[in-house]
Amino acid sequence: MQDVKGRVAVVTGAASGIGLATAHRFASAGMHVVLADIEADALAAAEQAVGASGVDVLAVRTDVSSHKAVEDLAQAAFERFGTVHVLFNNAGVAATAAQLRARAWEGSLADWEWTMGVNFSGVLHGVRAFVPRMLEAGEEGHVVNTASMAGLLTGANPYNVSKHAVVCLTEGMYKDFLDMGAKLSASVVCPGLIDTKILAAERNRAADYGEATDVASLRPEQQEFAAAFASALKGGYPPEVVADQVLDGIISDRFYIFPAQAAILALVADRMTGIVEQRNPTPRPPA
Ligand SMILES: NC(=O)c1ccc[n+]([C@@H]2O[C@H](COP(=O)([O-])OP(=O)(O)OC[C@H]3O[C@@H](n4cnc5c(N)ncnc54)[C@H](O)[C@@H]3O)[C@@H](O)[C@H]2O)c1
Image 1 (cartoon, rainbow, N blue to C red):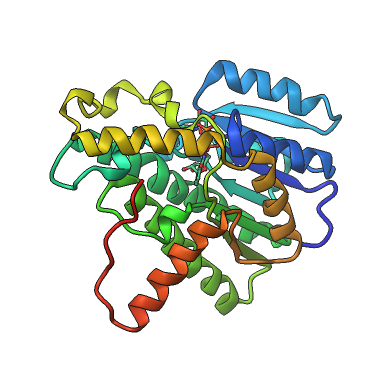
Image 2: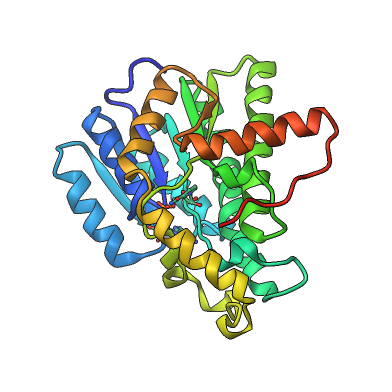
């Protein structure tokens, strides 16, 4: 989609971090923006801030883990703007940094259900609510799903698993759009370390998702990893770096969008080569 001015974009997880930066980027490119997020106060602030650029903005409080809520979002977006050209399924959570070193048989099952519910089902709900409407509208469009470098590297934890599912889903959708000769395209964005509020994601955990893993039950290695990871994230790229690459990926129809540090990309390259060579997985690098 080479000309984005005047087009309509929907952004989930739009009240913070990557989503907020991308909503601003879309608005500065002249796009009208629908902002969806579960955090009401932050969403209201985002509505005001993004609206200040003069484009039309609609904010809809949405829990993407609810299919009904995302259907309502799609209805509100199409009612207000008549159509949607860009869908950015970006909302996501990580229970804690320590979760990235959790073992599948340890910790709370609720962490799995919440993380999969937002990170994977949230994306699926967006696709199922918006894509049929976008196809029917018959206009040029683009779906961008936020995965992570965690979707290309492995760990038996809910975050990595949810992000692998998003990579797989999005790559399949790209092929489907090609097969159909659709006017839609797709991209997957796999950020590396980005300085956002992702490690404070518990702030948005709905009560019905149950108890988080008890921090006291974490292994010392998990605690050490969590501390190192939190400080690495602080030194990560600002979310505007991701936003710029997302817009560029839409304009240039680039499927893989990797705003990631070279050291992380090297781990991905090693994993991919190892798979093709049928090498057994290597031990994790130190935190
Ligand atoms: N920060 C990183 O280093 C990094 C790296 C790779 C991928 N990501 C991914 O980027 C995406 C954005 O995260 P971020 O880093 O900007 O974090 P963030 O916490 O700053 O922003 C995430 C936004 O999603 C919203 N959200 C959470 N649960 C929701 C729900 N159920 N429904 C709707 N909105 C919900 C939050 O309120 C928040 O506004 C996530 O999918 C995350 O997994 C982040």
